[in-house]
Length: 394
Picture: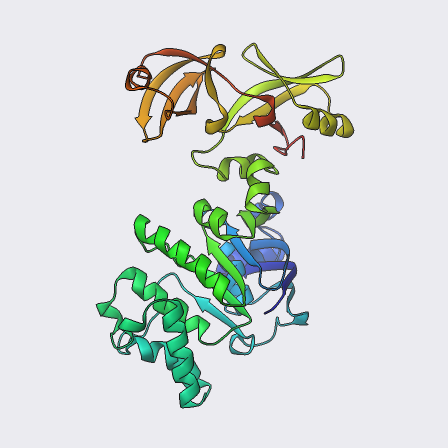
């Protein structure tokens, strides 16, 4: 239904009181060393640039305080944009009122009217627009059918479960047939089972309505399963934009590598060496030759031998006869796999062992105190610069 473009968008919260006076005189110590402090105030979102295609599902993901909800609220018009341009269908909307932007927003806390029935909640925005009664009825019933809440139309919110309330909140947004649908952590108040169900419902909903989605979450599982592309944020900065597969396989830096993936990636102090034109990674005496595609990219960039941070995901580490020595400290049985917390090279490492082809005796041997060795393939190595933390390959 719409394209959304953010060009160099910033959000600055002005100083108050004494800080404002000091800032004017250049006496605020933090101004000189803190990248989040400028003459005008505290920068919550830095130079945000993003082009969202028509009908695309974009997910902004990051920890609390990273600026993702602030960015969403600027798109909604609930927060003023300090600098930069926001365009919807190539029209600048910075100064257009929220009600005139043709967007709908689903909030974390549902924001339903407790004294109204589900039907009345769904119809409320359409009544304000003075939509004809028969059209309101048709749109409400269509939304209720899409979300499977037809049987609850006569109930009030207090008689609904959390998942049902969230469906009503989503329904209230889609009856307006908005150009852009904004969702601010809509599943965070639900338990794990309901979250899984509602994720599936949102995927089905996306297939049934033609609109552009911008979704905010701190949950990487939601980001990976819902998004066409993911925008990973930290402290107001965009760290990487890419498809779920891209950010998982080719993290731009150490932050993204540690944030995406569960359990998170293991990091080691290692060395990148080059012998006879061939790159290898050396960890605690264990040497792994990198595959041809990584060799070519490192050569193309002219990367020299150096100390690096090596990243290897837990599912890419295997127990073997040769490799890095480790001691099992904790063994967690997870059904089809065992998560081993081992001590190796003076640090904690997580290893995921698939137990599908193991018998009970073999699984029981993976116990606390057992000495093991682990290895990994060069195709599963992620190499990061020690100083910049950027990925050396991509």
